[in-house]
Length: 260
Ligand SMILES: [Zn+2]
Ligand SMILES: [Zn+2]
Ligand SMILES: [Zn+2]
Image 1 (spheres, rainbow, N blue to C red):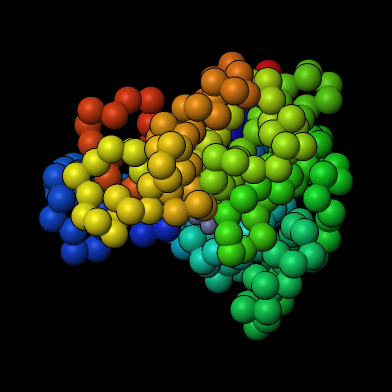
Image 2 (tube, rainbow, N blue to C red; image 1 turned 180 degrees about the horizontal axis):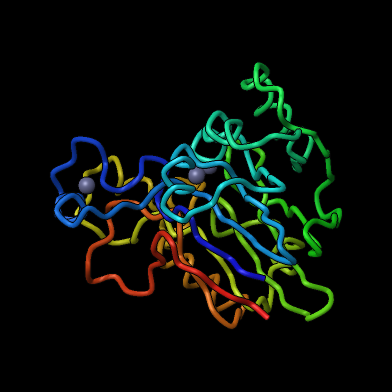
């Protein structure tokens, strides 16, 4: 299976609108972007989109994607579904869309005027087959909204990819076990624990430095998770403008992983 990180930015994206920090200025000068969260999974000639970024149009143009065959939604935050209006423009048949009932209810209540989704409700941990792969939505911790990570298995090759989705460091033990030992772990790493922060940001980093505001992992939290889950490789995403050039091992928009 082939994984393309379409968007590696936080909910505001990098550069932030109107921000004069060093990172945002550098991104502006270089014409670089961290767009909002979306992942493309390709297998057996079919394309599965995990979440629909508000930057979906830009991402599809950048990567030469003309459409997708399936959609999976992890949670009802705008940075994960506000691309549905753009997606609608490139879908000609109702798009099979998978998610847990509460997530699909929240998203489709907001987009009730869009006729395109063909809804498939799945339960947490219930495996479903799409594009020759097995997917599971596993609960994570991202209050106040119900949120899921995604575990993908190729049962022919044994390949496994785990996506934490938006989550704090401390989530459901069963989900933790599902994600263990993946070939690739894609993990939320919202901010570095140490930074040139104002009080508003600094006060929201947990005492152990592993979480931001009880709902995202810090860079340190994500590395701690990587050490606990022991994937072969990992990609840190959902990244804010608080990272500088000194931070290594951060994923970039357009990064591709081929997992056999
Ligand atoms: Zn998000
Ligand atoms: Zn900035
Ligand atoms: Zn979120």
